[in-house]
Length: 242
Image (tube, rainbow, N blue to C red; front, side, top):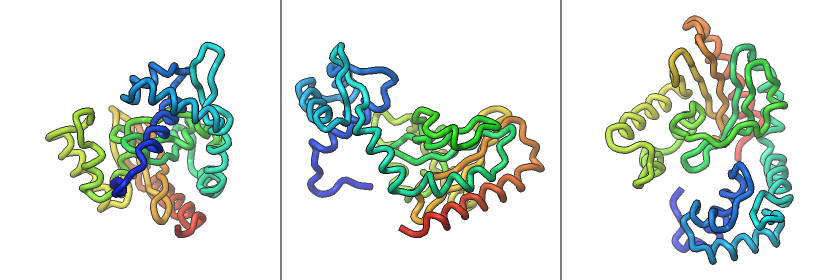
């Protein structure tokens, strides 16, 4: 989505700082955070002070920052308010899980945020928020969701000097997205011997669900495609429109 005519830059910078704190593996100092987000230290200090006042981050004893209670409340309220997890979990529980990784994720910029990432045999309820964000171009869920964008919007995601896909590699990737659009789902062999399959869910699309397995016999794929496609349709119906 393109920026509005008069974007609120302070809001954008504050959310960039909040996301950087939320995704850091350990508490982060204001100077380090300023380097991560590419902003002046004084600007970041002011933004962190505001976020701490709101309870979205909290300052540790050694003057570093980590997620605050307000962020956890916001996360819980958003999951409840969207209805995505509560309505998806009953259907995800019915999918075959032996020897398969089950996942559900959403697209954020060029990353996939996994709401569920269940190891083989693990119940999806036990795997909520169990995986770090992952580059969308390397994720079957990311590929399925990028394919839902118009070609120029997908291309814009990978515009700029920091893009992991450029030139011929980007053009090949975009051609692959067109194939996903035609099929209605993504099917890739991302690693030697590993097959991944993903369907978008929601109307409009809100997320995608996937199954990944090693050494899957080719004759199993049609049944897995049917099972995952039926699950995606059931979740979409449960979510309704809007």
